Image (cartoon, rainbow, N blue to C red; front, side, top):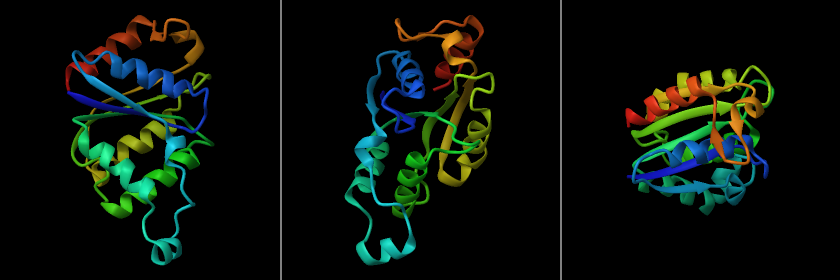
Length: 173
């Protein structure tokens, strides 16, 4: 199984990238590719830009990565209760190629934050809108208080109940 994983964040120290990398590594015998959204920086989407210049090559490259995957893992960072600007822009451009951005791929949606909310607002938005973008969500998980529940040195989730939930989601792939 080819698993594509990325954090919906442009932070170089992204806790969501740590979480999604760990989660994808739990898929047995998977070929995992972890993307960095910084590799897909593009002008802010607007219909004027699209009409004048077309769709940037980086958007097509991102879309093609999803096409080549069997499953997609995304961990959402939350900025002011919503998607990060970095993710939203990549997603907006990719949706201009095909609104079905996730192409009916099995998806796992995660979110985490340093605080007790665990980025649940943005995760709820992602799960709620998933059918419009052809994401076959196999499960979602919010990890609150990241530094209390994730061993950064070992690179793994160590909270037993959260780990069990994550493993159950992965078993449903």
